[in-house]
Image (cartoon, rainbow, N blue to C red; front, side, top):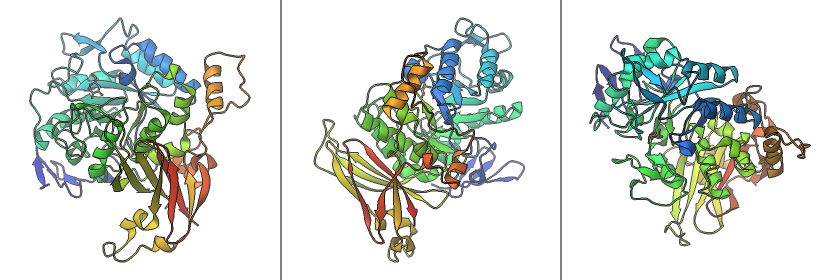
Amino acid sequence: MPDLFLGGLFLLSKVNAYLTGDNQVVIPGADSYNGLNVVPQMGWDNWNAYGCDVSEDLLLSTAQAMIDYGLRDLGYNYIVLDDCWSIGRNSSGYQVANPIKFPHGMRNVADRLHSLGFKFGMYSSAGAYTCGNYPGSLGYETQDAQFFADNNVDYLKYDNCYNQGQSGTAEISFNRYNTMSQALNATGRSIVYSLCNWGEDQTYNWATGISNSGRMSGDIYDFFNRPDSRCPCTESPCEYPGYRCSVMNIIGKMAAIQSKTQKGWFNDMDMLEIGNGGQDDNEYVTHFSMWSLLSSPLLIGTNVRDLSPEGLTIYSNPAVIALNQDPTGTAAYRVWLKQCDDKDKYGQCNYQLWVREMQNGDFVLALINNGNSNANLTADLYDIFLDQSTSGASKPAAQLSEKWEVYDLWGNRMSNRTAAAIINRANGDSGSNVTDFSFAYNSSDISYAKGIETNNSALFGSKVGIIPPHGSWSAEIPRHSTGLYRIRQI
Ligand code: GLA
């Protein structure tokens, strides 16, 4: 892609550095454009489970459930109110929150969430209307940014519906989203800015200097790999983002753009579906593993109070979350995708290897089985360290001659029994057996970065073997599941 001139800014697409109007060089990759969200945001958003059925009770009772289930302390600390909260604008052009859904007003909701230890996110669209046909912010950026700041909002999800044709090139989309970026900055309040334009006009090429994350696909739906004509692309860039995108569809799109993810700016793969019932446990394990490894925001998208023990054990795996919160802020890359014969009912069969280098020098491998039956998959050190070899692949990487310990990051998954005890206790069932009740990890006590640095055992799963020099790692991966391994040089 050639360098672009965008509304007074030179955007140097290769290095992502740009020059502001007053000649300041900004290098977004150094941190983040506003100093916020250096690692991916975590939290909950109501949309996947509740759609427009929003209220202050929903937000506050979910927040309480997240505390009771140990999710807040695992780092899920944004409560994001999605679409359908407004009833219109007042005579000064400011939005008015629906008083039936939010009888105490938005600021009261924000303050109560803050007192529970959460941050508060809200939603609007860079269009005339939101996707649910409520007032959008296009042309009202200043008033709406001030509304969010006045209501102590900490996070804005900013959608793309009814954009009045203001899209089609990177420059047009950049200008539209930059207007809100500048309006938010002008309020003086620290507000994480999360774009939701579905990857249109290749968000990841122009949004890193004006925002904290950007959706890279059309809307997720709760299917593992079912193709749907309304989500036609399986690779990025994608002309028509569409909707009804499956987990494997979104993972596939990341292969081409993973290098655009960087510390402080994240490709947002959309909200999590775990708990909503459309996938089996193995499929949800793949969903959570890959969202973590690819440094997507982790926004729980289910009814937390009704979460099953199995669902809780997925959301509560600190060894997997630690990948997502790794200070590198980078995303795994796909080393190979191999077609296979045993196709499932959607005609799919492939195996994939993804690799990522972590801050402490460990590497992580994900072996995905997107086939119809269990399969023995192998990653050899040559594949894992292809990018570490010099002179192309002709001079083998030094890592090939080393020995590596292998940690299965799902090996120490919380038991269903413990998860059930946590849920029962949270729901006031004093008769339940709570003897093995214990939360998974408290990231406010020990950050994930510190935990990794100090080899906290909660963050390493279980040790399952060794890869000898020039060797390989093989594992039986269940149908539609993912083997997720952290390997450390001995
Ligand atoms: C779009 C977004 C979703 C959600 C809805 C709300 O579809 O992509 O994530 O915010 O709008 O209407």
